[in-house]
Image (cartoon, rainbow, N blue to C red; front, side):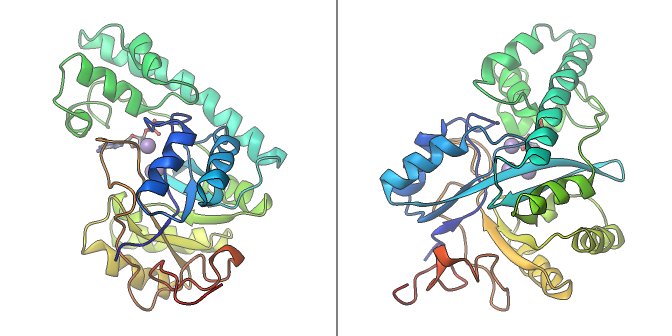
Length: 292
Ligand code: AMP
Ligand code: MN
Ligand code: MN
Ligand code: MN
């Protein structure tokens, strides 16, 4: 049975295609009972999602996914149970959002350079209410017929060495983890299988992340292959980190996994929710084993 706990998802506030309330309704319909909304660098959807979750009987967890530059590479840190009112977090995210506008102009200029015009306006058309991201440029490029789908866009455009790529500096790992933990939240290293780091750098990242106050690693996530799951379960254990699970859902027909289809955490993992009162009585597989 798939897990009923999903701690990574996106709404129209970042690069998802469903507004927060519709995202929650979709989660509920798919059997998700504990949901975190983790929009990129933005907390704006949390209130709307929490209200919808209360109405749908879904337990809602405030979340965020922070963009980080670590040794010239982009990595993502999810914050769970963050407090939106914590000023350093709110201000840090505001700066990241501002930087995204500047980067978008650079990306558009790069696309102009290969004769693809109008991408800045086109991407903002897709950015309905929050941040501007590469996903919005990707949707514009699909619309214009430059690739068959968003997945194909990221093979030809928007990545290092390809048109539309623009070097950008995100938050430091120290700041991202600090904002999350300072706000009372739990820092989770997102989808580690997606970072092309090599073995040694991955160990260094996990070590630094933990030293800085990071608490968990996404072991189960929409973009991990079946081989990556036990691999990161072992690394989590080795570094004494908790294990998290989230679909990284971005909306119907988008890449990554649909909600309500997450596999169980492997045995031996200590789930990030192990001591959450909301999840009292849930086992590591995200199923209720006894009345709470
Ligand atoms: P940004 O934070 O603006 O750089 O955009 C990153 C987002 O682009 C990620 O959160 C994904 O939603 C999306 N993305 C990145 N790489 C891919 C890919 N290979 N396939 C589909 N979506 C991707
Ligand atoms: Mn995304
Ligand atoms: Mn991510
Ligand atoms: Mn994500």
